[in-house]
Image (cartoon, rainbow, N blue to C red; front, side, top):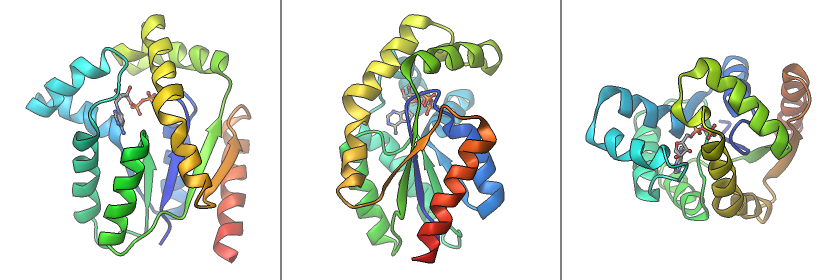
Length: 193
Ligand code: ADP
């Protein structure tokens, strides 16, 4: 099994690299952002509550996203592995993920952190906003707020995995294929161990 936490600020390229990783390693992609947007589109109560928070550039409560991930892990007992994308985003979520994993007899093998400069993030998100239809991608103030929220609450999650010797930094400023090559080379070294 191969369970990866794909980490990085908004706009770092997690979605793009996830698409390539699922094809290459036949993993199940669990993106809390995608799951939340599906709830919004379906008009559920959870989606309505989440939308207000997401439109402020803030994080939705830990128990909401933890519950979503737990359901997905439980409903895929035969998975070859999971890519956690946009989760965990707080240290409390990381601790909950460890607990869920041990309860289901699995473990997180590594955190792959896409490192990208803030200025490049703004550019990419605004560009994505032209086609993504995501309201949180179209407002510069909101983008700034999301990056601030990341720096304040999410960055410490990297230290959590570093302390377990599971942290790998990837240069996310390179082109898409180069980033993917760097990721596969980290993963193949890991699998040789
Ligand atoms: P991006 O990484 O580009 O910001 P995502 O699709 O991952 O986009 O997330 C969009 C929004 O969904 C976030 O700004 C946040 O409000 C909410 N969200 C997604 N994942 C989480 C999470 N694990 N914990 C709390 N909020 C989350």
